[in-house]
Amino acid sequence: MSEEDIRATRLEKVEQLRQQGMNPYAYTWELTDHAAELQEKFADLANGEEVADIEVAIAGRIMARRVMGKLAFFTLQDETGTIQLYLEKKRISESMADIDAAAFQNLKQLTDIGDILGAKGTIKRTEKGELSVYVRQYAVLTKSLLPLPDKWHGLTDITKRYRQRYVDLIVNPEVRQTFRRRALITAGIRRYLDERGFIEIETPVMQSEAGGADARPFITYHNTLEMQLYLRIATELHLKRLIVGGFEKVFELGRIFRNEGISTRHNPEFTTIELYQAYADYNDMMDLTEGIITTVSEEVIGTLKINYQGTEIDLTPPWKRVTMHELVKEYSGVDFNSFQSLEQAKVACKNADIQGIDDCPSMGKLLNEAFEQKVEENLIQPIFVTDFPVEISPLAKPHRSKPGLVERFELYMVGRETANSFSELTDPIDQRQRLEAQAAKKAAGDLEAQGVDEDFLTALEYGMPPTGGLGIGIDRLVMLLTDSASIRDVIAFPLLKPEKPESANPTE
Image (cartoon, rainbow, N blue to C red; front, side, top):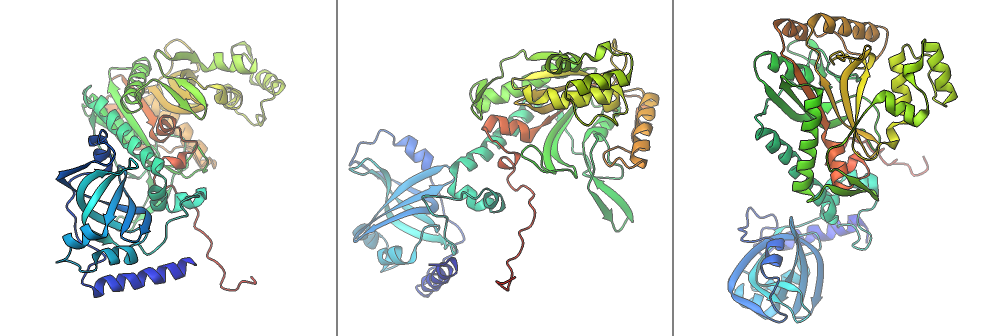
């Protein structure tokens, strides 16, 4: 039977329910319990026994039906799990005689897999050992018009799973667990920071100047103000304004928008947490990063040794702290501390099979290219990569002892960046020079370069205390702690290209 035929049949059942005085789209149902609670509470109930003096009321979606004459067994699924409904004609007919004289017959003929049902009854474990609600009364709460995917194959088309996440959540319980775990992770991070005196303050999503990162922004337009605006590419510059204003510990956990490629690691709309602490530096931020991630791992997963795609990741602190120079030398053999000129460095990089570097404009850019090509994918266990080139870090404070570098780290795990941190630049003159250099690149056609945020520079001229800043990619952290291979697996509704409509002419 085609999906259209199934839908037509179910619409007929909707009308039959209405004709018999029943509302197939109910307004409410009073719950007393959920499936998992009942499974736990009555785990020790013996086969064949009934708890006759306690009545429960549950609700959920019918996931399976077995009808055998005067008996029926339904599998009901709610948010927490599944439980069996034990449906007996005599019991239901007697209990519902004043509501629906044909209650059991209607149950058999007018319900389908996918319907949302409410049920009241006692608890009974069948002779075969299945904990069940021994139903006295039921009600169709929502009639489903479309069939669920085949129970043996489920929803396996990965793109369809993302497009129809609601169906994915129905038929794949592990997906619900992923998003439940994501909620626990973000709640745990907020709780950890709250206990340490941080406060969360929301900053603008639409900004007159996109800043705080090297990224291509999404552009929009405000009709009333008659001005072009950008969706934020970071929360950094507004959170720093708050530090200037006198707050000492602030953060925001929210959405960021970057008009860039899509992959298993990147989504144009993603979630980060950025935090800023006055009188701290990037060393303090390393300690804080370890504390946040290890705490939520223990709270949510229950261990610091987790399995990610077949590899054990040990989050036990302290994590390694290694400079970018040292890692590039280790994995490529190229020692950037030994070169006297950019051309000399390029020759060494080409000999190490580092590609696409002919137009690299500086030693720092070249170092970063070598790192991305030769090092990143090898950083599986947690490691802080420290001391980045100033050319790729326009908002970080110069390194106090290493010329040409800044006090910055990135946390890498399973071959990808998970966190980024600076000792924040507080010198307004230096900051202006760096932003103006970025603006020149932007004017020359660099779509990821920042412009000059004059109001931010004005804020810095009022004075910002020494500050440590930290950003953690929530989606990538959730991927790690839920063993998810793709970022789309941890974003409830990832952005997808619209499906092409089917052609009306089958010959086209």
